[in-house]
Length: 476
Image 1 (spheres, rainbow, N blue to C red):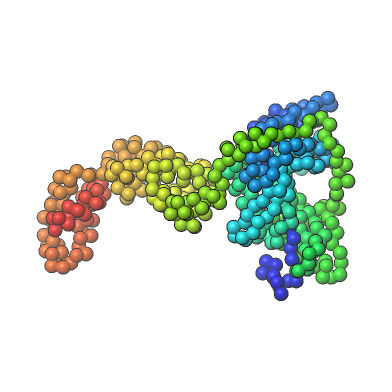
Image 2: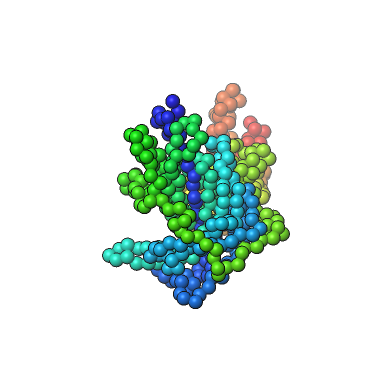
């Protein structure tokens, strides 16, 4: 017997995901309205967004470039000619009565994502651009906020290659990470920048035939994606094993109950009456444009991780931690411009992460920027301060936002590196502990640490440790 998520079962899940990723753009897809999150209701709406009669959409070509960047980042093929189409349906927050999308010829096709944990490739059928709808707000009455209406979305449609909730979660994480590296979507699911529809069906293990699929709409967290897929798969199995048939329905996921519920019967393309958008010309892209965008792509997570391990000598675990967040990787890249990679890893993942976690902050909110930490490490390298004092300075930098230089100067923390000064202090300590010196010379070598401690206490930790050790050994 095979298993699905640890349960004995003769069935296999078949999952395809449709991810709606908001394009990182200051303006909407067909108007000049701002896309800034958090503005007051209906404060970012033009006549085009509100579908006033006589208004015409004007294509924002930056969104086209962003879609191309995404397609290239996902190893997709860019169509040199694509088209916009009208998808007709009526809903209160869709003022036009149709959505402008790409149905017949999308901008990107045949992409892929490799899942490291699952060791498998997930095919991406297409990426098409479309405009978002507005938002219905249900309070005492129902209100419509059109701020999101017309915001550019990339719908990224996978092939049904996913076989478990765990793989679905890994796919979304990897997709979000790649889009963030590419700079085409911020991936913030809490703000609605990334939403997911999951197509789920089940079939007997070993069967090549697909079962009847149900689509679960508007999942806005990876946890809910996993829960919804698992519940829906077992709901379908229960129906089939009781002799029933699965209906092709559109589902919603009730997060409070952890259950999927039927929203409506599943539509097909005929229901939407697609036809070419008459107010927009075909999108024509030159190979020269594609090549120029290709040159601007960054190093992506898998390549960066490989370089960190093979060229910088960083452990696989640390490389995965650093590359799993673009901002963390950027921070690390700034540190290694001047500093040893392994030193940079320690200060980033132990010292900085420890303080961020304790304060409940993200790396973007860190009061110590990468350049500030790099300056602090400069003072350690040139022996201005010791590593121990550096940690104290780092605490003060984190608390106050001040620079390392100003803290070191204000508190007089410069390391004592004058050989004559340290020699004098060592001599004084040894003279004060003649009995301990005699014990050391009679074989109690562990007392060496005692002398070092006394010297550091005398200098308030500011004596250069290497110089202290060297001079102390000579004196003893």
